[in-house]
Length: 144
Image (cartoon, rainbow, N blue to C red; front, side, top):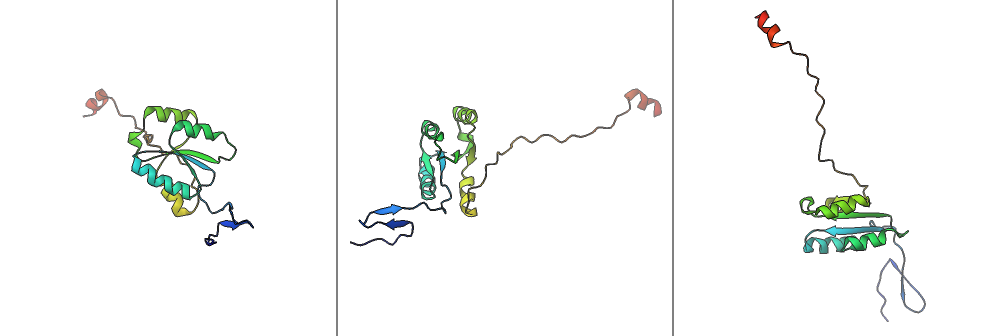
C-alpha cells in the first residue's frame, strides 16, 4: 500500500487517514455566500474551500447554518455591487450580514489572516462652512 506524503493527515493503524485541524486555514469557521457570475463563483469557491471556509449557493442555505456554534463569521461576497438585488440587500441588513467586495477575500489571503469587516461609506457628509454675514444690498448701495 502506498501512503501519500501529507503533513495535515495522521495515519491510524488500520491505514485510514485522519484529518487534523490545521490552524493555518484563513477561512476556518467562515460561512460565505457568493454573488456574481458563475465563473467568478466557481473560482472563488475553490479558494475559500481550500482555506477551510464553507461556501453557500443560496441565502437560505447560509441562513440555515448561521445559528450553529461552529460559525465564527458569515458574509456575502459580491463581484459587483451594482448587480445586487434589493431583496438580497434587505435580507442581509435584516440579519446583520455584511456585504463585502471580493477584494476582501484577496486582501485576507495576502495578509495571511481574516481581515475585519469595514463598511464602505459612499456618502460623505459635506464639510461645515461658516459663511460670514454679508451686508444688505441697501447698506452697500449707500456706501457706494
